[in-house]
Amino acid sequence: VTAARAFGYANAGTVEFLYSDGNVYFIEMNARLQVEHPVTELTTGLDLIGWQLRIAAGEPLTGRQEDVRRRGAALEFRIYAEDPVKFFPSPGPLKVYAPPTGEAVRLDSGYAEGNTVTPSYDPMIAKLIVSGATRAEAIERSIQALEGFRVEGIKTNIPLHLRILRDPAFREGQLDTRFLEHHAKP
Image 1 (spheres, helix red, strand yellow):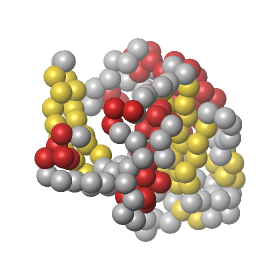
Image 2 (cartoon, rainbow, N blue to C red; image 1 turned 90 degrees about the horizontal axis):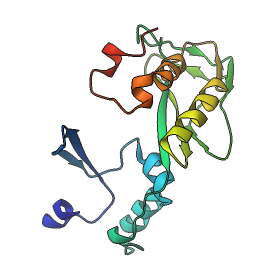
Image 3 (cartoon, rainbow, N blue to C red; image 1 turned 180 degrees about the horizontal axis):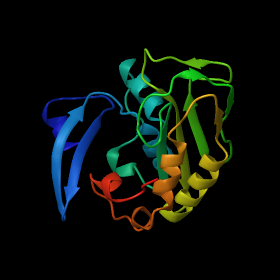
Image 4 (cartoon, rainbow, N blue to C red; image 1 turned 90 degrees about the vertical axis):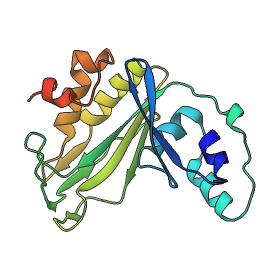
């Protein structure tokens, strides 16, 4: 907020930080929402897209930073048409596409059963966001949602997400940028 105010920025955006050994390092500020914004929406109850549109229309913000309260936890999974081991794209027809549903499940997707994932564009077919009262509950609900996410005709990274969620280091919050090198092996 201080950085945005310093240069007169008045809209939604994303500020990125890196946390390491108790220190917080500023990385960048993006004058747009990031793909992970649904996590913030589910843990704050705010409609960030709605706010961004109202600001663009010249309307004032309806809340203050001091009023934002976080509750619970949420995890977001980018569901890609890719091999979950080799990370190669897996274009092709979605012969079966049956995403999970439920109270704690949000799905952002532009695909439906029968559509084709082409090699010409980003292979993301959906964002699955799952919430819970605690991180542990969000993890368990995520496992259930991913196990129920049926996709046939292409390979997806759903098995990778499940391996990560079941890894003890992930469950204990022992994360770093080399997590996949050391954990969640197939």
